[in-house]
Image (cartoon, rainbow, N blue to C red; front, side, top):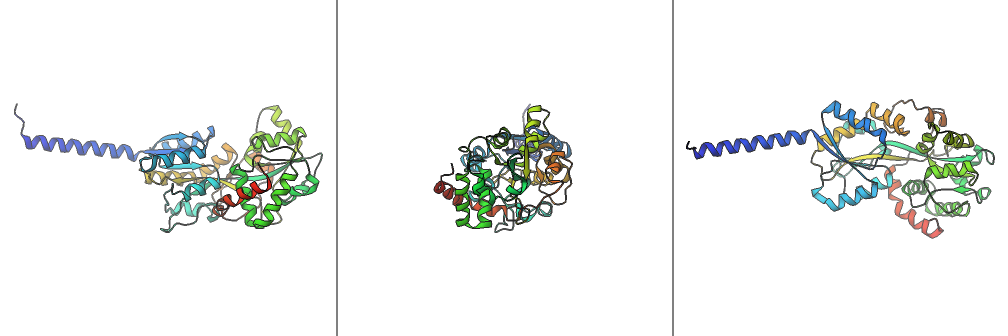
Length: 352
């Protein structure tokens, strides 16, 4: 059978168009996420989003530093659509490095307070949004100290705590963010004096994570320590008798309730600079700001909701505060901007 060349070309063109259309449709139902959130309880949110939208999620899990390094190496060839990071300083750094695509979303702007998101970009878009928060609190040995002894961050530098303070590395992002906030509140000079006081009061060289600091107080090695609330809430909700015993020996204080409020850090999300599925990426971030997802952050991983007016039912978080606490209102972006200045202060006072 002899083929008409024109018909053959038309058929080939049609098949090419159909293949391209199918590929586009497949891409429309896909979302590629680079995530530093390593919490098994998040799986429910991913599956719920897919069930609600039909959008399939492909995920790469790594720590924040690994994700940022990968994005820089991949450049415009990166398949990432959404970036999830777990610290304000890291979000700020990625924004400064141009790794995010500022977006406009009425839903996100209505849900997430202005101090928990990036400053508007030149085009009016926002580079990243905080999606959950973690309060940085003080735990103390109830046999040695009282709540009023440690009701502010400033008091941690008091001479009464000589040889009593346990804290993780000053260069860890959780502490860089806290110290960046203190710089906003006190100014650089007073903050550096305060940091020197922390060094003078240490019971041991900084080591371990927040859970190790909590255990250090319970064991008597430390009298006071600093931790993010979700580590403490995790132990409070644990079925392990050893964890229960630890939490019974310590008290917890949300500092600075009579002044500027307790420091909160954020876990947040952004659309990747070279995202191929931007509409899906925005839909996903909007979903994470919805009441159902915000409740899951609270009940699944013991984080505080970032969205306005969201109620939750987490017995450990409520037991810590009685249901609410006063948090500081300084812009998280300003905290991130202070990290270089803070690191220089840490070097000068010998805070490892």
